[in-house]
Amino acid sequence: MPSTSSRPDRRWLVLPVVFIGAFMAILDVFIVNVAAPSLQRHLGASPGQVQWVVDGYVIAYALGLITGGRLGDVYGRRRCFRLGIALFTAASALCGAAPSPTALIGARVVQGLGAALMWPQVLSIIQVEFPAEERRKCLALLGGVQGAGSILGQIAGGGLIAADVLSLGWRTVFLVNVPIGIVAFVAAGRLVPESRSPSAHRLDLGGVALGTVALLLVVVPIVEGRAAGWPWWVPAALVVAVPVGLLWLRHERRLGARGGSPLVELSLFARRGFRIGVGLALVFFMGVACFFLLLALYLQDGLGLSAIASGAVFTPLAVAFVTGSLASPRLFARTGERVIAAGALLQAIGMAGVIASVAGGAGSPTPALIASLVIVGAGNGIVVPSVIGAVLRSVPTPDAGSASGVVSTAMQIGNALGVASAGVIFFGVLGGAHGAHAYGRAFAIAIAWCLASASVSALLALRLARSDRDVLERSPQVQAGQRPVGAPALAQGLDLGHRR
Image 1 (tube, rainbow, N blue to C red):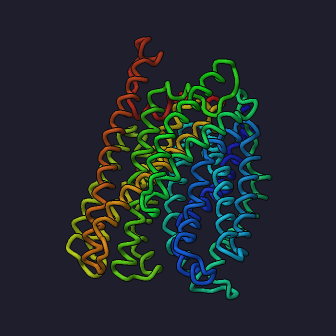
Image 2 (cartoon, rainbow, N blue to C red):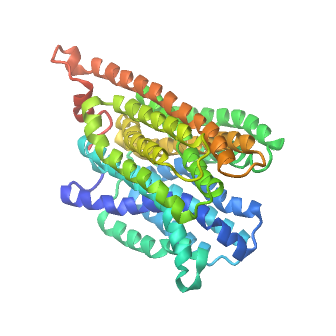
Image 3 (spheres, rainbow, N blue to C red):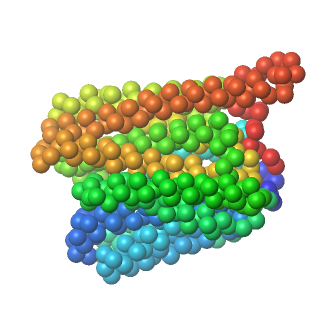
């Protein structure tokens, strides 16, 4: 059923609570990269174990998003958000107390599952609680939270380790989540209204099993392939993923035809805007995570900057990201989905500037590099909330959880594909070389992949805008001979998905 709350004042109190969960989920993707050398020394972890501390979270997070979204539809979004917060917080405490690398990896997997249960509820709660004109503002703020989490992960991790509070060292990067998580858990119980889907009566366990196996066969090879040296099981797993995925699709169709509650409402993909939007999310995010990762490698390993100094270089990008996110609702209201294309092109221009700035092999960050990063951040900030909003705008409210899980999974698979592909290019070009020139050359060549991702995203965004116009032309108002409404007005008024 829809939300039980309708009071505007209460509605706006919901946002800070769910944003805490979103912030922690994103922060913990990045903060561990900074802590990795310290925990490797103190726990005696091997390089492979350190990699799994990072990847265990990412893999569990990606695998659980669709199921997490559907659990919210079935059992209640507030309930699942609080359960995700509790699981994430408890796992953070276990990470901070881990006596061995194996225990830390296990706790990180549980932490990723908590994030996967928590994150889709953030999007679903926004979808259910806010009408279209307010929802865009919420998603813009959420985009700023995502950007802040990504960048602060670089800065806060180094700062916490350097502060060495109570001689805890690297453990503080996990333990800092505990008090924040407790506050969010209590506040969610008091401020977040409960809502669930009237059409989703039970969890599709068969769909969960087949879908998880299919995603596992895709995500693990992508994430682990390069570090493992691309062994035989990588292509084998990807090949096996195809029939498993087809079995899952057949199961979902049959369950839906019988009137059951499938894990994913396949009818969503009958909506052209949803199809294109999910593809856009996949392609665009292929160029996001890999750019941040390669930039960090260039700054820290190539130029020899500390984690804090590297974070300082990221800061102008973060400020531009937040600024672009906050401006995106007004831009979207004026131009519709075309603003996504403009933001993606802006990001591509910034990446071209980065390539030109680093290809010369300068030994320190140049003003041209900083200026280019600002352009990248602004474009990224415009696109991220606009993409999410464009995808979810065509989704019926009862299916908010399922749709949020699908788009979030597309984003994470895009991140994994981008990191794997760009990583192959980067380390292949770098070889065994060292120094600013070698890293600058490898970085410049590798992020050409990110530039291509942004360019293709711009083309998909234009297709999405055309799809939006097609919906408008078929609307009852236009067919009745009333004055046509432009795409900006459609973005404000014709909300196909919001049904209070």
